[in-house]
Amino acid sequence: ASTQVAIVGAGPAGLLLSHLLAERGIDSVVFDRRTRTEIESTIRAGILEQGTVDILSTLPGSRVLTDGNRHDGIELRFAGEGHRIDFPSLVGRSVWLYPQHEVLKDLIADRLAAGQDIRFSHEVTGVSGIDGDRPAVRAHAVDGDGEVVPETVIELAAQFVVGADGSRSVVRQAVADRETSRYREYPFAWFGVLCEAPPSADELIYSNSDAGFALISQRSDTVQRMYFQCDPDTDPERFSEAELWDTLQARVPGTTLREGPIFQRDVLRFRSFVAGRLRRGRAAIIGDAAHTVPPTGAKGMNLAIADVLLLADALGDLVLEGDEHRIDAFADIALHRIWKAQHFSWWMTSMLHRTPDAGAFDRERQLGELRSVVESDAGKTYLAEAYTGWPFSR
Ligand code: DHB
Image 1 (cartoon, rainbow, N blue to C red):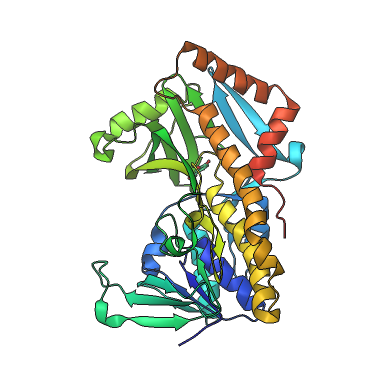
Image 2 (cartoon, protein in one colour; image 1 turned 90 degrees about the vertical axis):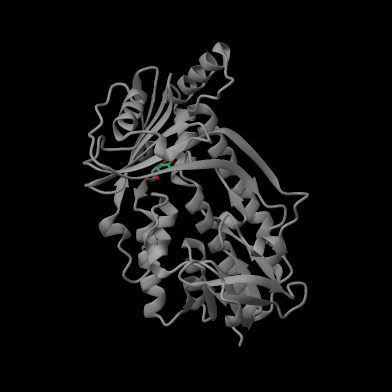
């Protein structure tokens, strides 16, 4: 069996890529080890940059503009006071709160309606031939327990293989170079909760408090997403619901949180990572397979979408015209934005969290940094530019 582009991973990156390739008349097959239900029900990111919305809203049947909520700002809270960053007046752009699993439902519906071949419950177990012009992927069906079924092997030849298979990417092992990969870890994590309650605030609150960071986010009129900084080794079951509310509440002094049953809790460890090579011969990696950012600032999914736009153009030239210029330029152009997003995510993280070994000097300096941002149009404008997303280069 063969196709033009083999795409590993049916997340936002892999599915949007298959859509953009189909628009250009290029066939692809998408593999994902998860079931459609798992993909459509896992709660992940929530904030879409303006440019991401512009692209997603071109999908037939996209609900982002009808069911998403435009957010014209965020609040930075520190030293007991809130400071609003107003995006439209600073940069003429906004962001949208539209949960990632809703993006995925829209993308999967679009793809299936168009007859796209998506192999759910299929794990890609090997990638070969990427240094020649006929790469291939090997995949196996995954059973109900998540185990690979050895006798179900599929071999699929392609002209190009794309790894959009997330932070534990299989394709990355074939493409990236460990020596030149870059990463850093952080001495804290986020404790995330989902609760049934009305929103506690109109917009997101990023709070630097003496007790540590908290983020008050949303999912809908009835479901809210909140996070607080915790030790990376925290056992999510360690806290009672009352303790979780006390912890969250203590970190957003000045706001009374509207409480409700907490129905999901998780500890998100975070790190910064950029793979040492994004493209090798007839394969490339995009999205979390290629880079990871800490969550503060909501760049992860948006950065994946930026990669996709570049790669779709490059693959269009390669597959339809045999022209390699843009695929050769892909990694350098992608890395330009990736490192800007890495910096922004690191900066938001370092400015808002309490580092365990931070002393009194570090604490006062951090408040000075926050004041430098909120008391300066230049400071606020940088934050707004980065948060709403730099223009896509193509
Ligand atoms: C959410 C996550 C983020 O990392 C962020 O910066 C804003 C919102 C969220 O999950 O809602």
